Image (cartoon, rainbow, N blue to C red; front, top):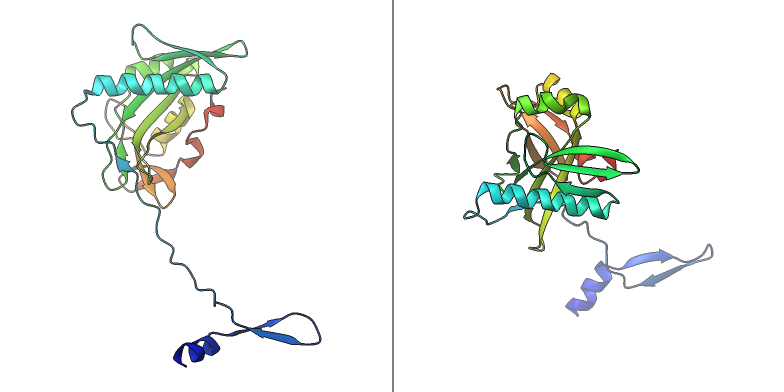
Length: 200
């Protein structure tokens, strides 16, 4: 009796045509709770040297470039450019910065040397920041932030980069978006996430 009464209480009248209505037992749709997008989980690699992480990031970028139709190779000597890539008879200079560390959604990337940036700024170099982490399925993955030299200059003028001799980029994951930030200033950089078409 109780279950029958509960069914009647939850019953919904459904209109099937203009002449009448049909009564049936239908489950009432309940609103789902919306949970915030979780922060990426940090990669547990405390015993790997930063030089190895940096090299791994460079090869990860080379792999992505190949999948995107580029021919790419790593520089033998690092003087501010890590990778040279070519596509459609054009050549591109790329510097890569990689990290695996995150704290409450905030990621600090290794610094770009200011003198190196000034040296290649007019050459139209690209700067790719790699963040490796585990996704919600516990699978390792990388997020790639692809910026032009003009982007970096714009971040400077907007006060997004730390004010010291080198260029230090910090980003924060916030409810499905990613922001570059410094103190109280921040801008949405989700447009640069995993978009290798920006290298052109």
